[in-house]
Figure 1: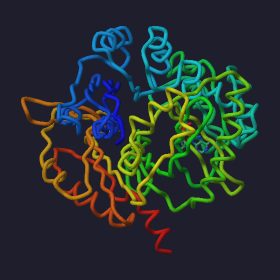
Figure 2: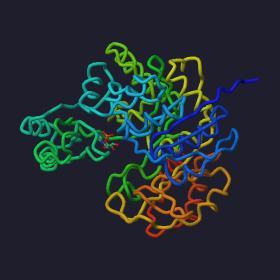
Figure 3: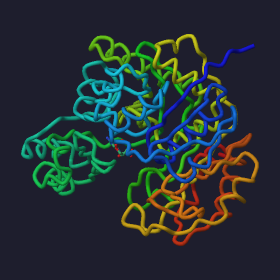
Figure 4: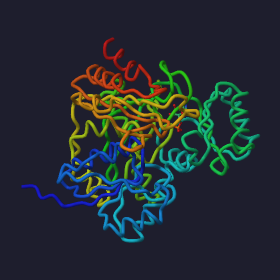
Length: 440
Ligand code: AMP
């Protein structure tokens, strides 16, 4: 009989990604107590598979490092799992470790792959990781000379974290000049924009990769694809992500392995050479161009809403996988994935990604969740006297899985159609291009 070590786990964050993490961790027979700081209305409704205790939301912000440390100590937490990028960049992992606490996620130095685009770009170039032609600048004149050499077709990126808004896509010299001035001269992103990375504009299909890492071994997940624009047909403003599906037909198993090797092998060698101990998840954004895969950026945490489709396909025990990352024993632990496809459709508040109202009552959640192979992950939701109401831009990640991408997609939209709140906004074409590619 398998021995299950009792684990008291704290998850940090409050979005759809964290709901998916909590949902999967709650299903593990290892988990005996589960908290989420600060969590959301959906997370507060989860229960543990072992013993049936409810998941408890704790009123502590994801960036309240002293509060979180105190809580983990007081409650004798065995493992803290960090969802968002900000606490990683603030050094939460280093702080917990200095205090003898086990925590999953990269330390501050390793988290620079996301917190500094300059660091990442230099690292990729130094260690032969395929990426866009690029330059790093703090001088606007030199930056403009470089964008002129690209005929203005470029991505201008603030170095630091900018709430996912620090990348400006430009198609001509005037746009590029405006973007450079915006970040370097007008300081629209404050200190995050002290330096910029400018990349040539790459064309192709963009996919998300994820790999769990324990400092020595990197284990690649199946493929997923996000839909960043707010409106159908990839129109409208960039968002945090309006929907995902996994796997994508744009990269088969053999190609995925090849792409993984091309990226992860030099990346791991580079980490070893530079003494970077990366434990957590590495999430490279990749453009599949005519001249091969190229990295657009690295993230140091799970994607949102990629996590929702990944964890509904993961057959392995997530507690065991995260423990193996922390302990450096990932090599001995295979990951098992369901062959099913999974689709997540994000329902957002009207107006998102601009300003939006809050406090709108949400109807139909139970009916949607009663559908087979369906899970509604909450993001910006709150509890108002027992009624779930909207409280953020992205509100729900309606996720369904099935034998085919087509059946998963149909089920996800069946669930979406059962859910109502005033002003709800969502895309009708999540996975549509993939379905067309499969059919053709
Ligand atoms: P990043 O945060 O660096 O991934 O950039 C956000 C989004 O901007 C990406 O998901 C891409 O859609 C787009 N992007 C970033 N860099 C490039 C590039 N070099 N070429 C084309 N699109 C890009």
